[in-house]
Image (cartoon, rainbow, N blue to C red):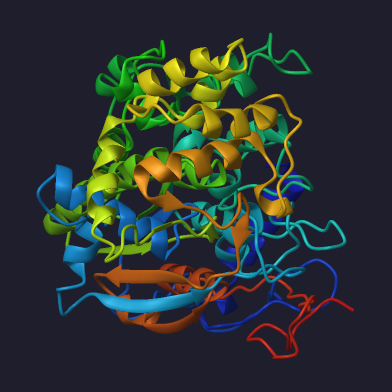
Amino acid sequence: MDNRRRHFLQSLLAAPLVGAGCAHSSGGAASAPAQGPGPTVPAYVPAPGAPRRVIHLVADGMGSGILACADHHSQIHRGRRLTWFELLRRPDLQVGTMDVRSQNSLVTDSSASASAWGSGVRIPNGKVNQDSRGRPLLTLYELLGEAGWKRGLVTTTEITHATPSGFIVSVKNRDDAEDIAVQYLDRRVDVALGGGRKFFLAKERKDQRDLLADFRKAGFSVLQSPADLASAPRDGRWLGVFSSSHIPYVVDQKGGLTRLDPVPSLAAMTRAALRHLAASDRFVLQVEGGRVDHGCHNNDAAAAILEMIGFDEALDVCLEFQKEHPDTLLVMTSDHATGNPGLNGLGDRYEQSSRVFRNVSAMRQSFGEILNRLKLAETTSDRIAILKESTGYAPSSRRVDALTPFVQKKGYSLFDGLNSDLAALGQVLANHLGVSFTSTAHTSDHVPIHALGPQAERFRGFVENTEVFDHYMDFAGIRFRNPQEKLVAGSGIPTRGERVHWT
């Protein structure tokens, strides 16, 4: 963080009026409350009964369809429902539904959705905590950091990806991963665990900066393997980058056909992060099952389902922590739905649906890995053999011949949203798995948001995504709001934030 930004944050949050509920002005950059004589009051006045620990769990791309499919799979292969559904039996679980639209579209992307939580502002898709004119917004993790809270990020994506970065950075383009990596250093995130090592390596970065060395100089423990994670010191800050890009899909890790280096699971990273952060009595941790979204984008039912199971295992870890630390609030949600998959009714009385769905367990590779192999195959019989080995399914030559043009980038779908090799492979495998998708894109679904613990009732009912930021500010006793922008693209309904907006 540059010195001017840090000075502004410190002056804003140290002002006595902040604790008394003063808001910022609505023009230009947010300004600090005026200083002056008056009664001395605490700088931070948390809401009564506020949690001192917050775990914000995000199953990226999770709509109701993939959640249901993962529950089916869990019952078949784990002998129990998802913990997510078991929690719905608890009378203290608060159940809500959240509108996650962005500023410029009814269909959000991950960066705009995460930024609504991270700055309290609906912004255009593609940006991270910047408004439509490119003006940076103060972020949740900057504000909480100045207020003395520890801040953690755990994900199965690249650590610089849209959802984790939405809590702490400000960039004009969500793909500016190298800049995002630098901002993690400048803003001193306390724990960051995931993939994306390439954005920290001198030989991979455009500026040839050895960012891992800079993190070490700043006192971070740099972790690059499960063994590093297991032996990491309890004090200091952590940067964990366990793969060059995203953490490999669980289906590839378990399948045995793809050569992969060992990586920690989402549950293992979550457990380690909580063990580390537990030394502080105030922290917020974002835990993202990021590759649920990727599986749905790829119309890869097995990949998405197993990522949801991995997310559920991380939820179990968080519940164990909450049991030991009852002042912890768990918030479980998604940033948007993707592809809207569903288990279809197959057979005259749908009796085949359960039978074919069991084939999910036979999948040994993700669609991306399968397509890499199919592109090298020369004959239909070779492609059938590859599919048989990777999926347990040997489709007819007629189906494979229909798939081949898409593999060769010559296919044509009547619906543009399914006009890709991944979507075509998904349609072929839907005959084997029973699960099909509406597209490879995000959808406009309102998403579930469930909460358990102190102040959980704030998340009950219908929730605007920007309200999450406000609640987290209240928990820390910070009275601050970024300037809001008017919504465009299909909304004539005034929103909570439209009374303060850019002109």
